[in-house]
Length: 323
Image 1 (cartoon, rainbow, N blue to C red):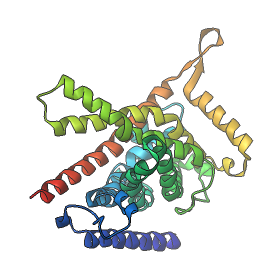
Image 2: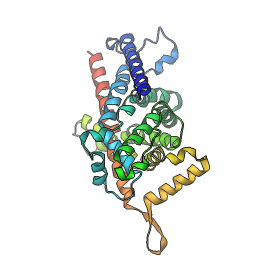
Image 3: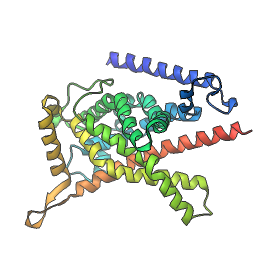
Image 4: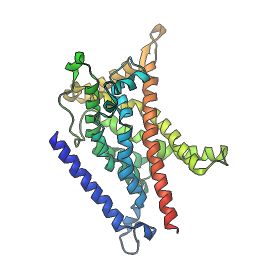
């Protein structure tokens, strides 16, 4: 535990220093981040300062605040009975603070995570195109966050167990800086699909809102488009998110080969999201809708709030630069 605290403290100090360097090196009064006449051509891909600040400060804030909603998804991956409301109640069983169990760990790597999601995505998009950038950005995110998200999930799972189920506790928790292990592939796919809400869906939704509500404030329409886009991406990313949580809280997966992990994933989807109806035909279960609701709520909060922070900072930056 002490090693983890030392690591995250040093990591946080380094990131704060790097953000400070950007602020000092490229002051807002210049109106642009770099001077193309005095630097190499590739620096044109460096994003504006508000994108860097929103990723460095807005990301950790959003991730920590939404810890109970993230923990609810973790508990749902190992629960095929409880309703949405019951899952949330389990998160806070024993006190309000229980909802934030393990939230500290993903909050620290959220600094590079959201710098990746924001500024670095724009760099990737400029170099390799929008859709290729989604996957590369997702993989970069996972390098920073896979271990921390795994540990958060395991801590939330342990905290939810009653004394009668104490034998199910995970004794060997994931290290926050580890980025290899069971669940890495669904973690990357979840990241990739999850960000499509603000990077892909938001723009056409905004165009549709412009047509339907021409007199509505542009800021309201942009915010609404971000939240609606995040709702859609939350629905699409649900199976990947829950498979990651399932692997993170299933210690047996650590010792399995890839073929057996694939079989375990298939078994998880079949038992979690489908039931046999009349005539033996498969149909979606109520648990599928529950998990979609849980994931959509979290996704709208995570990406919607972050996009709002990013847009407001960018608007304020350009407004001040134009003075």
